[in-house]
Image (tube, rainbow over all chains, first blue to last red; front, side, top):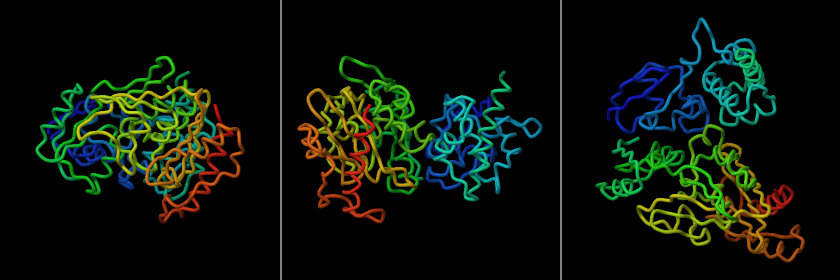
Length: 158
Length: 258
């Protein structure tokens, strides 16, 4: 079927079977491979993207369901030259080991700021991260990164 | 996932027409967080999906002593918007994880009636009315055991009216990986008496009448034991373990009434 998706502010016309998942269109058709497929069973959060600002698992959503919404992937958050504050915080706090879960973790951090604001505690972040898995178990620095990234977003907006 | 025809109707009548007009098996799609995984593993292979999220069935409103929640209202929105029933808001905020709560819907959960789902426990303890495109059901008649409800073939839940209790609370012991309830107990104190429901423990959600009687007569609930005979035994827990957990969750729920 023919569908139009708005991804990182740009409209894309896509021809794909109805059964195509959002993450498949992002990765296979549009080359936006920053969104990862980890478990493919809605558990790990590596495929998190923002739909109208809210984090969802792109492996458990049909691409066709994203029509009419603003989709933001990790590529749309910042650029290599100008990282988003949440990305920069992951870099500075060494909030990654192998890096596979990182795009989803960054998006989970964005979701926490959307819901709880920029002043996050590590307890809250730990709780809110229940939908994201890091097989390296590098959670300590991921939590630090999200707390710092949220605070940096406050500064940026001040 | 096997391909299918996707319908995205804008009205309830168009949705039922698309369902009825399907040559083969049709299924309704709401948040998709049960259906899409089931389709990926080919447990379900419908020929057509009818997306219900464009029907305008989302929203929360209070009407007298009931809180009405639209069928496609997201768990995340119930968590923040159902303040008239803090126990229900808390339950919704504990389903799955943050990303799941941004997609999953009340109607989807109730229609699916997973024996370990949270919402059926709330519907039963809060004496809910489940409205559909062709009538309504009392929660007591609606849930009919594992993945079974009173819904007819193409019937669509439009909204659910929860009786606003004097106090209520939900306590669940989660399976640490799936986040589903190993056991969940919803306790609600209504003017007409207590209602206590249990999810996760048996083949379907049920009312714990002994606990209700004890609470109604002011007896001690500490010694209450649920018979393990009809409870689930699986790789995660035995029926006896679940029976014990019911007592523990009841106690927890009673200490967090709000």
